[in-house]
Length: 338
Image (cartoon, rainbow, N blue to C red):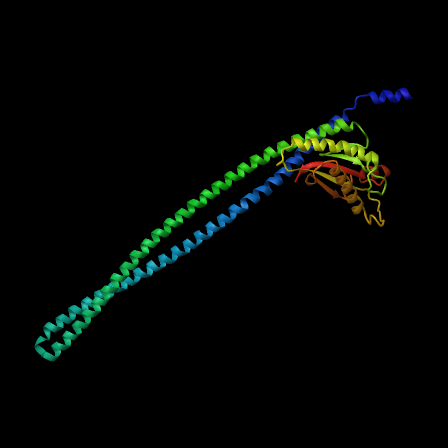
């Protein structure tokens, strides 16, 4: 019987290799989606300032357009006034000719009528002079308005050209940002793959440590006793290995690469209610915090770690068995971006 079991253990098992390949593919997909969201966020931050400038330019263009419409309206009114004045001047000249005809025909009617006619003629001359002065003034106003219209149209053209230049610069910045983000994605993926490889070498093949998707999963029993959040000595040994790899990897990564190690605490669905842990939320969070604090004590920078408690609400196995409960009680480590 013992020889038979030994023989079965020596058989080649392709399943771990398949899982590793599938996990790597899923890691890439999830990571690209995450970086895409991050890129959209940075792009929106970059474009916010440009939107403000565009809004200011659009406001100026709107004001110039309104002013141009007002000037055109004033120009139209002035032209109507000029036509009215010219019509009045024509009538006055016709009236003047009529009075002169009356004067010539009635010169024989006596000095009194002649004096009246001369007074009427002088009055008409004054009216004609005032009308001509008004026409000259209106012509000057029209000329000034035309100059203002030309200046406004020039300013409007300059604003439109500036607006087009701003749009081109925004498009260029967006393209450059996408390229930079893609480079960051490649860098982080390379370091994450390096982290996975080193951790596999150090931890070896253990049933209580496995890879799920883009993260390493440790059973809670590796670090904690049941219902507790105090690290066991053997759990600290495993965390020392992890801390050594992370500290070395952190030194190799560029300082501006926004990576972070997320530590997630999970429990099974059996309720807990003690003075220290009123719920599984408290227990999972306390365990994640205990792991993070220990890693920081071993040299991992505090701005490169985060602790998250999920309680029983992210199970790996939904069955209500002891094996499912054991699988769901876990601590997960994931390298991701801030």
